[in-house]
Image 1: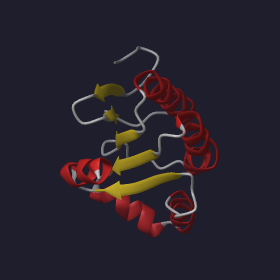
Image 2: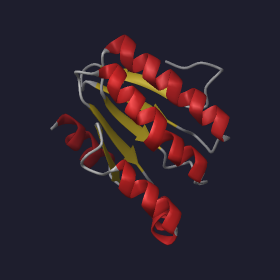
Image 3: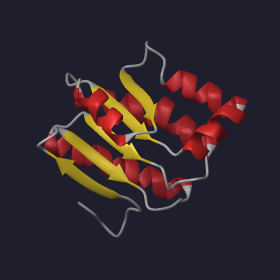
Image 4: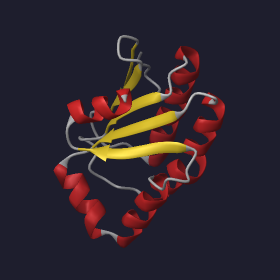
Length: 137
């Protein structure tokens, strides 16, 4: 699945029960929000609550976008997909994780997003195989 309106590729993997979104590069916040809304539409259409988000090529970290995903989008997506649980594996580059580690603001948002009391599960991975294994568990 791909559209000129979005900056990522979306692939439904029925063999794995996953939706895979891959970004080839950075994008402005409004474009990323459009991408995530397209991801949710694809998830609802395929009844798929396990997502692999490949953000290894996205270098910029926008706190306003992170806040939107944690406080608006992911909770809304989890509600829309219920009773199916929403599990999100974010495949990151080592450089991206270094930026997370060096920013108190990013650390706080990440802690909120991965908190056990969220209505969704979010984890960061460096290895795609480990991410798929976690999603499939």
